[in-house]
Amino acid sequence: DAGVIQSPRHEVTEMGQEVTLRCKPISGHNSLFWYRQTMMRGLELLIYFNNNVPIDDSGMPEDRFSAKMPNASFSTLKIQPSEPRDSAVYFCASSTSRDRLETYGYTFGSGTRLTVV
Amino acid sequence: DAKTTQPNSMESNEEEPVHLPCNHSTISGTDYIHWYRQLPSQGPEYVIHGLTSNVNNRMASLAIAEDRKSSTLILHRATLRDAAVYYCILVGRNNFGNEKLTFGTGTRLTIIP
Image 1 (spheres, each protein chain N blue to C red):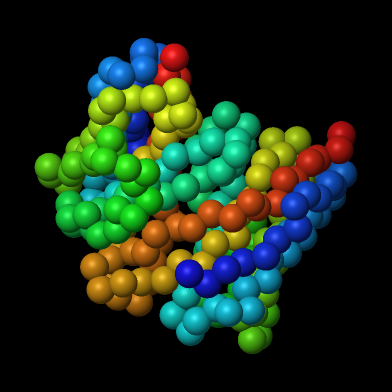
Image 2 (cartoon, rainbow over the protein chains, first blue to last red; image 1 turned 45 degrees about the vertical axis):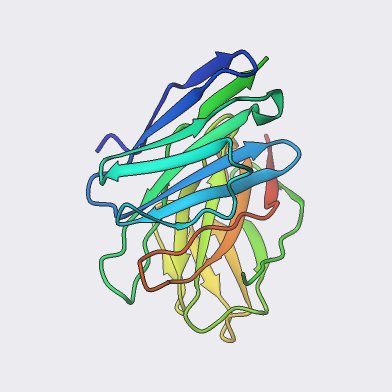
């Protein structure tokens, strides 16, 4: 199992440009989460999906951020236009729930380090 | 969200056991207790989780108090590679699947050679 795969690993972009981060969850996992980590704010949940449907997007900072999950094997997080304060490490995670009684460990990707200059 | 309280930092000597405490006095009956750790420059990594009974796996043991208001992550023999930030998180279930993980500040564990 290759785990949760994120791309790119590093992204440097100029302010105002569009940035797209990608995530491939573990096959068979039905929940997907996007997190952002900064020194000041720690790990923050941006949005999460269950069965490809967005459940909670209250952590999305503003309209410049959008996330999609067109199918069970792919999700994107887009920032348009990007700003220097968006610089952070963005993590994607996935999990499964095989029954209503048990919840299983969440698996995180290696993250995308975004720098907006 | 039910909250957890952990010490900001702890130190331990290499090759000795480490007990990382977590208080969660407002835990609900359906919340699972999850532990994750984050090594430098890596994403969080699942360590262990439990509901009521103590749990063991290849990485660690989880001791859960009888009233479930606290738990302890036990690393039986710490190595330098165990130096990380350890997060204790309560995870519930919703009607759609797994609930979100809400991270606190965790405990930064330093291992002394």
